[in-house]
Image 1 (tube, rainbow, N blue to C red):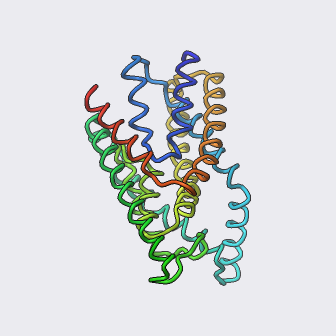
Image 2: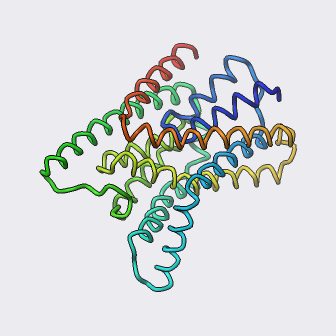
Length: 279
């Protein structure tokens, strides 16, 4: 792999893993426009490890606290608000895991066309915009105290909300959907504050990215000839995706506290139209 290909693909992975813009749509462009060969499973695993380490490092304090309180709740059989977050994360992971087991091969073989990715990029982008609009109206209703105060953190999140967000995450198997985008959409529709919805989405990405990396790692172990990239390429890609992902998480959390999702909605629509016009 050339240093340009390594840099571009690692940056794309670091950016699109956590922004609601669809990594599938972005990964098509460089390969189609520049004619790059497939980077191989090894590089895919490396950049996924980079983004996984980024979100773990960024939320390390939260993860330690949630894990300890969840384990304590299991031992003492006494629920606490922080332990409830841990159980919500487990519950929300199950639908995507089950759908991945039963439908991933079908989706990857049937729905990988550019048309599907482009239309999904546009459609789920518009849905994100609608959820942001609905959520902002809920904010004003709460400010006016029409229906009481909405929880400002994940400690009051319900198990039913976790199930709905988990089912929404399963839709991310459709190329062009964006895992972070669809979980944010569900959280906003449910009335979570944007910061809380994003935080839950990022925490929820950990088991999914880890599972995806493990599956690709097993393929690589069984078929080492599919690695494609060298160890140096993979190390550079992992490092770049790690740094970019850390910066993206930090920026996004600050951005959504002041702005809505319309920047990403407009961007997704334009990107989808570009894909349809070019390919």
